Length: 97
Image (tube, rainbow, N blue to C red):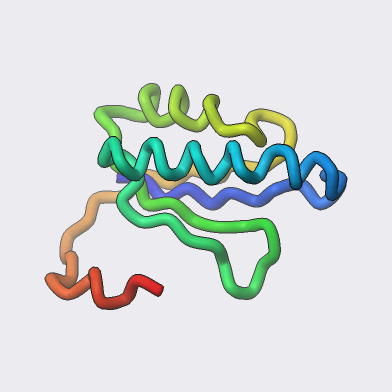
């Protein structure tokens, strides 16, 4: 599994953001429906930044998925951390906003 911290660059214009964000949201939906993006959400203390918990066969597949994002590669920063879940709450769905 992976945690991806995405931060959209601060120098992006409002026009670029208005054009690209709907594509970004559609990309989220596509990979959430496909089962790759398990949890997605914005950070509450940082604007234009959020986190994805993702599951893919390997890092190469994840990088291929990230390359489809409308902000990729130069309009956002993607910090990827791989982890192995050891405990998962059975009631995790209750935390969805």
